[in-house]
Image (cartoon, rainbow, N blue to C red; front, side, top):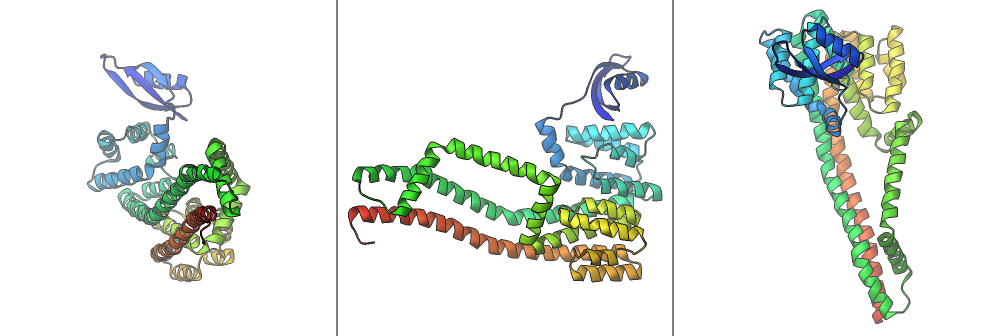
Length: 397
């Protein structure tokens, strides 16, 4: 079903605006008339750039929504009144529209989880699954508390990884800009001086000056080539074959970090789902969705198959050979003692801490390598220029 925005008037003459879900525009108009209002304008809203950016950054909004809804339900308020309050206090128009749509669906007879499932861009599958389990067990406030903990830990982990990448990114950008300035602004001035003095130049200087002149004259072609190459690469890794090969390359390059990251993600998600009352097979299927590496995600299919055959998850996970031995041992203990959810959460916490150390160690290695590469490039340019100057002035180098 599509979501349509509308502008209508009541029988008393008041103007109302909002959104409504319907198969098509005609059905939306009929549904509005049945509610006792007169539709003036009904249209499918276009997904603007602002909307796309909002949906991409909706993880923070989802955490806020979960925290506030959990507080309201814990205070004893019914779900419809809680959603109505959240709709009134929401600062984002997009989130307000989503909440109003959910509230409308609930009043029309849908369950809370089914209403959420109509907005997959904002509510992930595992979120909806946990809410559905909470509805079935009558423990919605408890499930929302667990969701809140899950989203907070996920956000903290992502922020740690992102903050570790800030300095290398700044270093790369600053070094790249310095090299571009040298090649396009500084070296052409030396080229003019060398042309006036005449004489032969060292090979390294000739190479640098040729590259500098080409970059200055055909910068647009270089820029277009970079953009085209990046777009081709993006399209390639979006395909199944390209994504599989790219993930395989990343796994070989940063295997330790990626395995710890995916282990923490999978175990925390699966443990949270099981604690919330989601059946094992459904929890495994939803947990697979949070794994970004296709190599590891495809191995979970074998785990899901083994669980369906009654083998549990320890043996299929061991056969898949994707998680570290310590994680497998802890999961085995949890499965044998009937505390699989608790042990999965401990595995997640263990590998989240280990991941932070691994990322810190990787950045400690990456930063000096990056500085060394930038230094070698700039040093090569400077030495090439000095060699040319010394050769022109017949001074010993």
